[in-house]
Image 1: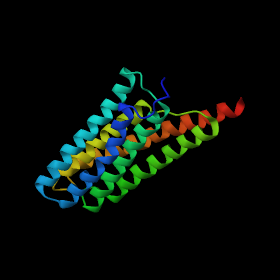
Image 2: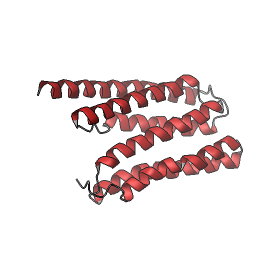
Image 3: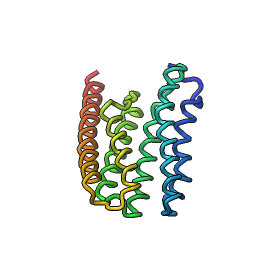
Image 4: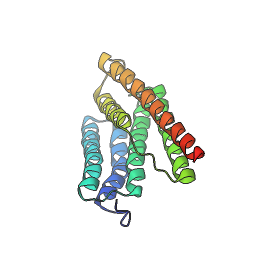
Length: 185
């Protein structure tokens, strides 16, 4: 693992995801068909950076502790910000935003606690990655839904919610095991 150059191409791609939030949010609030399409295209670019940052970090041997924190943090900031914007615009329900927010804050806080107190970095797991993918898909579909109670969107909200809870339980289990195992040493 290369920890000497924290600001490599992979980490710059992760940071760019956060920067893309400014135009995404501004276009979403315009609420025109063109602005929504532009927001959608910018979101696809952000999703692309999420794929390529990890791929390039591994391919170029540029995996860093900064990247292990920045990548999932960028995901969380992006998803919560876009979900909050869509909730304000009436495209997603408040309870869904609160579920995303609560899970992400708890997971990030627990991960930072373990990093700072035990020196162990808990990286994303497969369930978390799938959850982010499905939640992102739900958010993208909600952009173009004219009826927030459509069957498709309702099914995606349910699926996303189940995955949010399931992945949180897995993170919580790993957090508790890590705390227990490091306390016994």
